[in-house]
Structures are given as C-alpha cells and as structure tokens.
Length: 164
Length: 210
Image 1 (cartoon, rainbow over the protein chains, first blue to last red):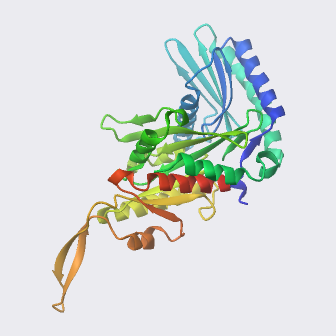
Image 2 (cartoon, chains in turn orange, blue; image 1 turned 60 degrees about the horizontal axis):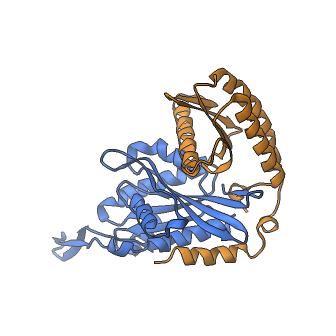
Image 3 (cartoon, helix red, strand yellow; image 1 turned 135 degrees about the vertical axis):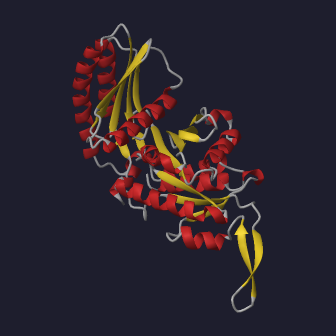
C-alpha cells in the first residue's frame, strides 16, 4: 500500500503520555486549554478547564490557520513558521508545530505571561516530538487494531446513514 | 492521513470537496447537513465572503457512531473554488484522506474544470500523494441545465447542429476529465441528485485505504 495512505495509529500508552504532557502544560502555565491536533485538523487530545463543545470546529480552524500560514511562509521563501501567536482582549492563542505533523495549541488569558507559555511549550513540543517519533515507528497492521470485519461493518453503516 | 486513536477508540478521516468556482461544493455540504440526522452531525461552519462565496473553507463533521467499537468521524471540507485562492486550497487539502472532485457539467465551464483538476493533481503530488492510488471520486454537477444548440453551415454547405451552452454529455466529460477511470456520479438540483451517492462512494474508498 502507498505509505502516504496508511493511517496514523496512536496507541494507548502514547495517548496517556500526550495527556500527561498537556495537563502539565496547562497546570504549569496556568493556561485555560491545551490541544494537540493532527495537521489535518483532527483533535488527538485536549486538556483544560471544563468540557468545550466546540473542540472539533476549533481543531479544524486552528489547523486551517496554520496550514494557511505555511503557504504564506512559502511565498516569503521562509521554510516554515514554527509558531504563531494570536492576541485577543481576553484570550490569547499560541500555536506551535511539531515535526510537520502535529500542532500544539495553548489557549490562555491575560493572567499568563506569553514568555512562560513560549518556554514551556518548547519543552512540551520536544517531548511530544519523541512521542510522535515512536508513533511513526510502530507498524501495527490495520486488522490488528480494527479487526478484520471492520470494513464490511463500516460500509453497512455508510449505506444506512448516507441514503437518499 | 486518517487518525486512529486507540485509547479513545476513535477514527477520524478527512474528505475534501474540490472543484472550480460555483460548481456546487458548498451546496453538497449544505444538503448533507440538511439530511443527516441531528445526532450524527455537528454545525456546518462556513468561512465565506459577504456575498456567500467560500473564502477559506466549509466544514461539516459527521459522526457515524460506533462501528466495531470505534467511534468513526468523517470531517467534510470544501475548498474555495475561485482561481485567486489557489494557496488556500493547498492549505485545506493538507492531510486529506480522500477528494470529491465536483465538476460543472456546463459546456462553458469545461476549461475551468480542466484547470482545477490539473491543479488538484499537482497539489496532491506536492503532498507526496499518488493520484493513481489516492481515493478520488467525480461528481458531474448541474446535469439538469438543458443543452442549447444552434444550426451552423459548414464550408461544404452541409448543415450541422452544434451545442452552444448547457450540460455536456457524460461521455464527453468522461473523455476530458476521467482519464483515470474514477467512479463518477451525476449531480443536479432536482432533490440534490447524486449527493449521497457521491458521499457513499468516497467514504467507502477512504475506509478501504485505512
């Protein structure tokens, strides 16, 4: 199979480590929320105050903004913008890229200093980069994770939900 | 690239609707949003201009529920079709697992379709994806615009009927746009013909590549 088409499978142990890393980042910076996204906009993990209902849309938009800024970088003949900062009246967002594949996003208010966020985000991105490396190294077969009859069941569900 | 979260038992896939301006990409998502049961869909998010042309993307999350213990979600996106937003399309296409190419069947839109398809092929190549194995389905939209003809006299005096506007025949569109022999579906305004047929085909193609 074309290696570009194989899925990224994030195992339980790696998810646990990601969640611990995000929780620590939120706690140490005093931020409101930390999100780890795939570059396609899918939320891998989210930690912070309360249960946000808009997390899926937030993931899609932040990944869109980042992908868009990557195109701006190309036009400026810059290799990549590794991080971006958006400043609001109440809330701020700091976004950092991890190995061209994942995006770490921290949402924080004026009680948190941007300098602290930058320093601790750098530490977190290093840790998450090593998690990503392990995720990339493991080669679990799809059937091992999903079961051999997954595709047939999925096709039945698709026919049932998407019918005229 | 689809994401399988083993701990949370979730699967996420990204499907992008691509095609020239005004071909009906946003209409596809609006129709899906209107028809899918409330518990299976999120809000339709549109970043559009004041004249309701897509500026960045439309986004519709669809939740297929639990399949063999995995919560499966499809994230549907559209790109902005207008020529000047080329770089924005690259951004939206990033990480896609499958593409629906929506073509406008009208004669006068053939060149725009060709340009858009060529651009899609180049963008996929730039993302190291092989267009031959990447999941793509075609939708020939606006099938319900009737073709108009005119009588012309050729130099040898014979008279011939020539199409001047309206939807081109499917075999003509196939000839120009479907050299790769992708699955192709007919779309149109009448009860949003072909929308779910297209969505079923691309969803299955994406799942087969997980």
